[in-house]
Length: 333
Image 1 (tube, rainbow, N blue to C red):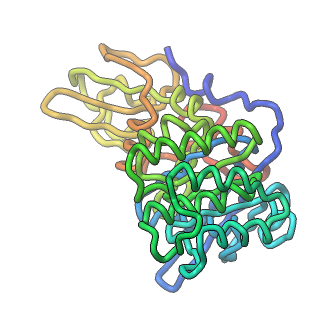
Image 2 (image 1 turned 120 degrees about the vertical axis):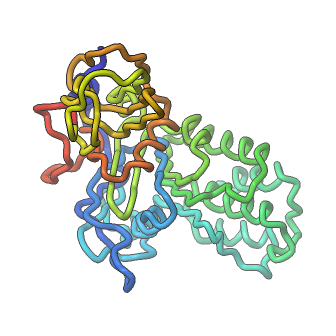
């Protein structure tokens, strides 16, 4: 039987950190966009950054890209401050808006990329553009939204960064083009050891490509770590409700069956006498339940639907000296 402690207790060997955040917060006039976020993203990972609109995903990436300063806390990129020359050379950020000079031609845009970036890979950038049949002599302002996305992607990719951050990069592309560019991205990341931090609302797309996960909701970090470890730390239960209710369970769920009371309940739903639950088990699960490991989409949707569920930060995603809600004495953190 699954035990979340078994899945999460042992951290892997020390790895270089692409990003380390210590109590990072960012406040705007309307309130906090991020609050007390602490985590590390090991280098070389393909990381999905997930959360509802307004959760703080764009703010987090903008801080790492030196476009915003945190109100609280500190964040480093490969051990350097984001505003440092070293971090700037190793980082590329493709924002949702994809700002490009509308009067430049595609060729002039790539030429500017070559002039600004010492490690520029002209062939890689041109290959991305030409694969979409985008004329090199066309002006940016005359291109379609999908073509501009391709040029912006070519700029970010041609820089050959060690950390590539993509904020909803392919939302305006059709499925075939998304699939093509995702293949280019993964091949380049594998060849060069690039760390990729990518936000997307297409959860199935993330499941196909990501091996690391950061989940943010209401400005706070809800879950972080290796995808396989996070999935293995949970069980999806289905069955008929039976026995007496035990009252609130770990995690705050109300009216759960007594046999689940010792486990952390992430999500608990009933339809008549049928029960579906996502739990972080602390030992064997009693009762007649159909059990399986949730896929990534099921896991993410449960955490997004249940913002009061206790957070889970796996050891590989933790930074020293910060409280992460991971209690080694039980499986619920």
